[in-house]
Image 1: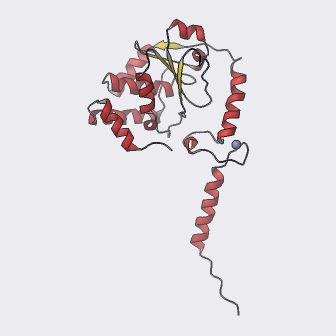
Image 2: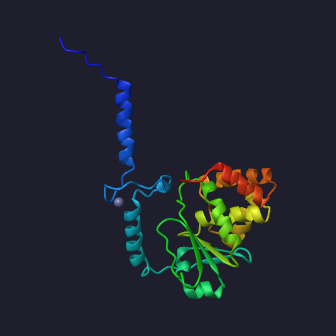
Image 3: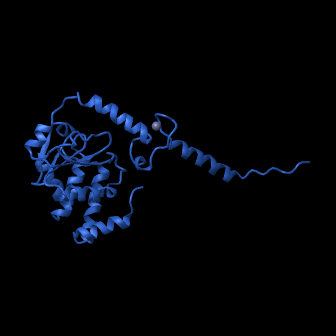
Length: 226
Ligand SMILES: [Zn+2]
């Protein structure tokens, strides 16, 4: 009689789960490279290379798509709108825009010679954690003279950024800030997840007494997205 073979079922199951989890992290397009961690909360299932390729492909396609450019003045400093306006240099110049904050995936910095840009990749997904992105957005807006904030439609992501900035800089409640922005741009509608995070942000602001430095410390201690 040979040695008894014992199989540790739990260990085996763990290993299978690990393998499955690893497989889920592989790029859907090339089936080879890993999906970067910064995409985990988004709908993007591409590796860094395939994402860049796809972004470039859409860029070539997108420059020919026409649509109505929308840009709405929220304050002297803040403008909010859609990606069509981001493609329209004349309109941006007309509003004397100096900085452009691009919020989303597969969006482009169309005129790097003319404006200062920052792209923050936020997914319009209720589970996306906005708290990771507040400080980089605030820092960029603060340094801007006239900042145009846009996502694709100018409805959920970019409006959430503008609302959060107003809550901090103007000491507004979420409801006040939302109504203030909605008066200027009626189509705004942060998704349900963003809305509840913005309400949480109101409590953070009260706790930090609306002091920029304390808010910054709060987010630093909260942790950075890898
Ligand atoms: Zn890939």
